Length: 245
Ligand code: ADP
Image (tube, rainbow, N blue to C red; front, side):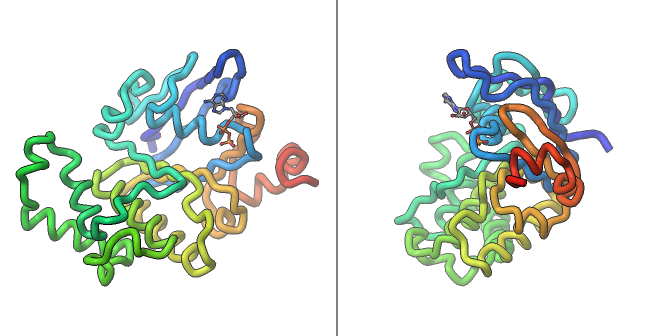
């Protein structure tokens, strides 16, 4: 299978400090990939590069093998099908759950049509089926600000899914969640991967283990190793720098 995303030899330099130094990373279609590593390893910077928030000093990010996205603006990258959910939810608290999702649909339109437009029946159906997927159908008329922490995170994931991404970038999606919320989030990510690749920066090793997917370990701006959780746990370097053995 051909990768949907290829990061090649990425170098990011913040005023002389090399936060990412020659990273290669490939993500396959419908793959769930975890990016782990100690604080300061460069994981968030890699997500920032992919979504266009941070520009590279050198290297290339290719989407669907041929589209060079390295120099594109953030909104152009979203339009191509790569969306990002940041750690802190950025939902509109006073709007209802449904209205938050409605806004995501309308984001694709120009401002004039956003102000005037009503949702089509098809768009409404799409929101309702998404509400079922993220487990918030019963809460659809509640103010988003009244949701529990986990529900807010799911709503925001839902808002990203309304953009119909091909790659979803998640930054510590289960941070601050209860055990049952973590479980539900895991299920949701599995379901999302039916149609979309998911690249996740995660600190919680138990959560990562439950997925038994490929993991990329970063350290000091470089990829230390890649493999299954079992493989990386047996890697001596990983044990030294990351698992504290
Ligand atoms: P991680 O997500 O793995 O914890 P980051 O990608 O956030 O690591 O950061 C990697 C390194 O780059 C850290 O040393 C961090 O302090 C530094 N860094 C990140 N963003 C900036 C910035 N905007 N300016 C300067 N240094 C930064």
